[in-house]
Length: 282
Ligand code: ADP
Ligand code: MG
Ligand code: ZN
Image 1 (cartoon, rainbow, N blue to C red):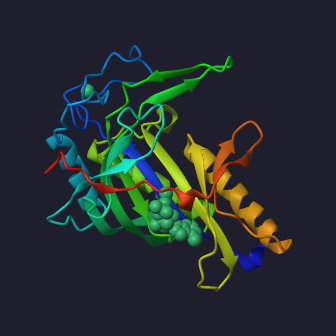
Image 2 (cartoon, rainbow, N blue to C red):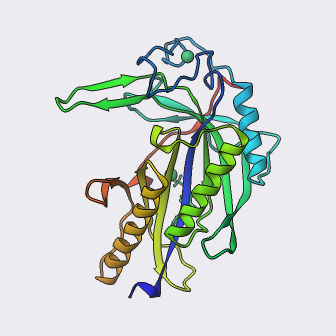
Image 3 (cartoon, rainbow, N blue to C red):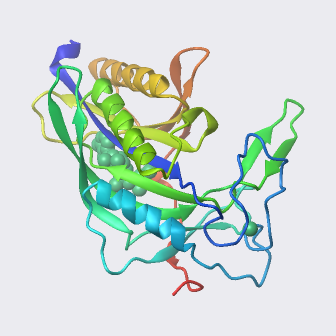
């Protein structure tokens, strides 16, 4: 019976920052849905040998504004780190991100719920990183790469698992998007991918304090899809547990045509990104 279960949801939101130039080079940030492919690139964001990243001051200022708006601490020390993985849209073979020392941490957002009440949702951290390029997979098996987006400043905002329903997840996303828009650091246009929302979803018997295995739902290009996908995933997991099965840790995508979540890859926790401090940025 669905009423005996409650959802546990934590959100990971990636927001491109509306700076003039990219995170570590002088390239212009262009609308990746409009500009000619690979027209805003340079040796730094192409990851050519021998180049050095220089931190974009404006991006740091924007990230701090967001951190303050989310009632975060802004520690005196923050540090960039290399996150290594291999993918064609990542020219250097690693992403410059932040790991042990994020720019902002321990904040909260008060979200407005449909019944008129408000609820405080913890913000675990917000850290700066660089966006990847964009792959387009054609039906003949060819993949096209556009690196205009590679190196665009990206702020990742991670919530505590404080959300308890699809409605709360939706309210959180709306509130966070409104804050980013109000600050003028992001247009909030999820259909263009400048704001990308992922929901980590698990369920547990109501009243229980344990955290069960979660799945991570991606490919959510609108708040409506976030809400539908979360709703679907909650119902799916309840069914799995009730039929004596076990939810497995997976990355899921939202299949808009079939209105269901589909498994993309499993064993997410087995990733070894070999994080280490970025030696090229003091
Ligand atoms: P990572 O993605 O690096 O493994 P975490 O495990 O710390 O990072 O959490 C990522 C997100 O998942 C956070 O938003 C967190 O609130 C949420 N989360 C963690 N555990 C659960 C759970 N059992 N159910 C739902 N969400 C969770
Ligand atoms: Mg994650
Ligand atoms: Zn560049």
